[in-house]
Length: 139
Length: 139
Length: 139
Image 1 (tube, each protein chain N blue to C red):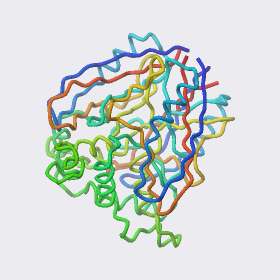
Image 2 (cartoon, rainbow over the protein chains, first blue to last red):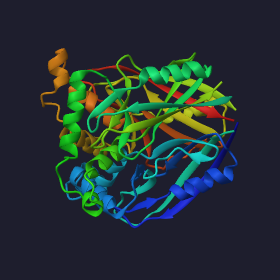
Image 3 (cartoon, rainbow over the protein chains, first blue to last red):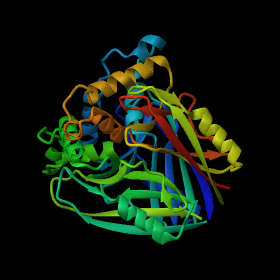
């Protein structure tokens, strides 16, 4: 049984940016040499998230509309009033989305569906440099 | 330290179908012979999810109403327009619900509350055959 | 490769109570002696959750408002009618929030952002004694 850590770095373009990181996770698993195990994908930061969805333009647009309706960027949030900030909605969306995602693999292949991509979701109001840790454990 | 994989198969009845898979997960842990460890339960597919709730009729009905209000099945989604599809809402609900759930166990017993069942949630518009991977690791 | 379990106990004050458990998780990791691994934090119970957000007063208030708007405590839920209960909304909020959260660590340090706290969320209508299991695995 062994463990491996890989760090992936991404430059995002602000709220509503979704980045498909599936291939990078696959490469990290492949490079680890571990064949039977699981990958824990963790996004560092309180205004971004990790989720899964079919990564195509229509659905990316739907996801943006959904989050905007669910947690409007225009509302007055206590967080913003307290800190002179403008990303209260980003924090709430990120908490709901979550920053941690685990997926098992066998013979080096992730158990993902064909249209089930792993997506880094940027919720903050500005461009950010994001770090995603891929922790791999198995044998 | 060892790992074990079990695959569970379910036939679902379309959007709003919830299946209690707790006993199947318990059996998979029991059969693995691993006594101290964790189980990672992963649903394959982008229009289903894994969640936990008290599995009883009233709450199942409440969960259906909640998801219908949150992500209406009737709305026009870009995903549907792009692909001539009708399950845009299914994708959004599944992304929000998540497909991955981990729970530790000790002496072979999952640390679940009495009314905390592990539930496979079908969000797609039609009957589906679903595969749930139970990855178990420990000693 | 080794595993360690720690149990954390908390007294909560009912719906909307958020407790920052980050330091307790850090201490559990430190005491385990495991340096490279991951922590799986699991809240026992179907009316509480584990999430992450920047733990400050403004955002705690925003999170309360968000959950109240999303799943109103006043609505009539089937769960309540069936069981003469009043915490149907608690169950739905908890299912959405989730009770399981995993984070990797290296050299004994959790990969958390500066403002990314691990939070126990109480959704039930009354004070509860809550058990949070911290399962640690690595080497």
